[in-house]
Length: 181
Image 1 (cartoon, one colour):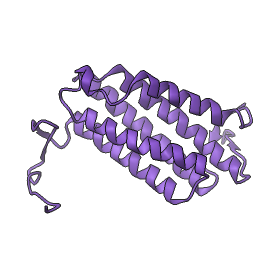
Image 2 (spheres, helix red, strand yellow):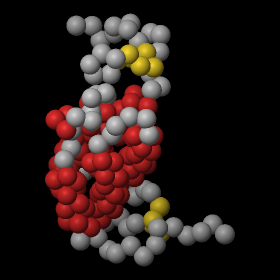
Image 3 (tube, one colour):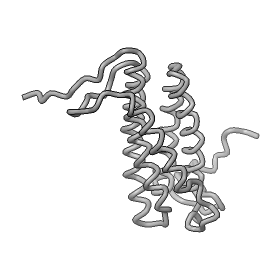
Image 4 (cartoon, one colour):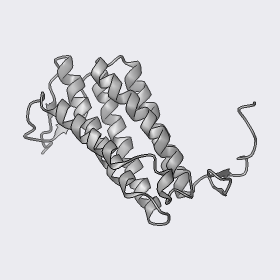
């Protein structure tokens, strides 16, 4: 099988099921940003984070792939197609709580950065927020399961906590934001 098909040479692609749409369609934009987020998680994993962080990132990569397939499916309003469930959201919240309990309480905003893994996870968090905006935009014109919106919102929170945890694991402190004025 060849990697190129030439089918998209005129700016269209197909959703699952074969319906052709423009490559700038809201479904494709959301799926593309999830793919970008997934790639950034791969970059974070390539930096050899602590095993407990790496395990979570691998799980997220698989879930994001599932989510991309769900969003590329114009029949995603049927319950049997939902890739994510409420228990997935609860599991993310539990992970956030688990990682956060070992971190110092935040009393101010922090700047993105720190060790390489943390900086990459902060960037992934920003891309996750963009994916969230695009999924919300998609939900204005197509059916998107409510669990999808909850899930993507929680993932950005989890990435924030994982970035802080990655810094703490290597002894790097969060940098407090100070106004430039």
